[in-house]
Length: 75
Image 1: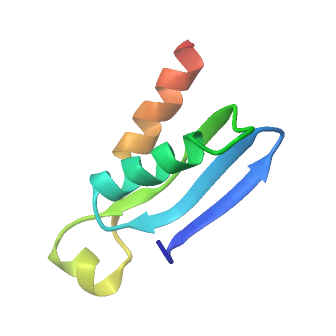
Image 2: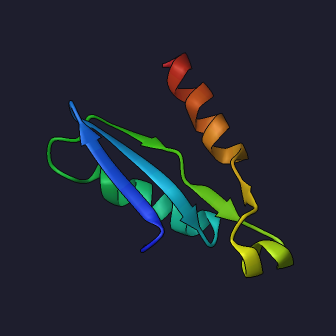
């Protein structure tokens, strides 16, 4: 959780940073959604993957955040 930055404005919570797995990414989003006054969550968290990513913390999979953005645009 220490690698997550949370910004809030006009009822929208924006999550940025890096998490260890997709479960942590979803959990952070669910927690943000449950906060009083939140209308939407922009989950830009990236998931670390691979051996070198674990060591360096540099490589992240942002496929899921792209999919969520596309889903929001359809609504």
